[in-house]
Image (cartoon, rainbow, N blue to C red; front, top):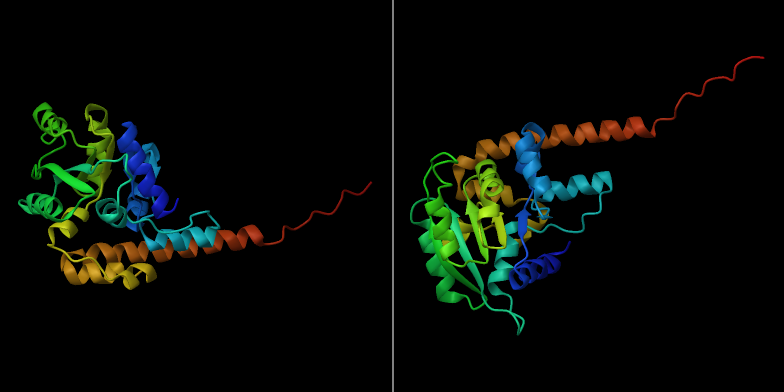
Length: 251
């Protein structure tokens, strides 16, 4: 779907209190899904799966899959934060779960100071414990007590998706998604790439400038992507190759 349709889908879910688990597959998601069945299933189980990365669009074009445009999770969040509300809508109530110490609080303050379409009603940075440690009844009750519409999770993709799968039926918020970089973008700790870099698929280059420790991940992801493209091209060539016809049997 388009970005505008995704925004409307989220607002409808908030208005109607309809469960909406959003996954945002990018290249890193795609790679993890090839190797980890539980992670792959978390994407399959989501109610809405948005093409977050340009490599997904490039592969879709190569395979003639009907993906119309990139809908990055960060862009979706920005649109929900700044685009005008319909008369029947109230500001979207957001809860940040995860992120480095102090960053979620900073993001919450930023939203509540300059947004009319979104309100942050709570945050928690649970640290680096196990899924058991960060899935206690007390933590879930704290989230529910905020009466949030949208729980934004930031725990790292694999852990975040696993946490959502484990806990979403216990949460009252209708909308939930792992949007790892959003809390840093909103807090201002990391600047997002210029729009032109996002459009041509160079956002990864900017992210390395902002967060140098990401270079290993992007290098590994890039190598996997090239191998995947060559594999797709090879399969397409084999499928297009003319089949040798057997001669009819002699009478």
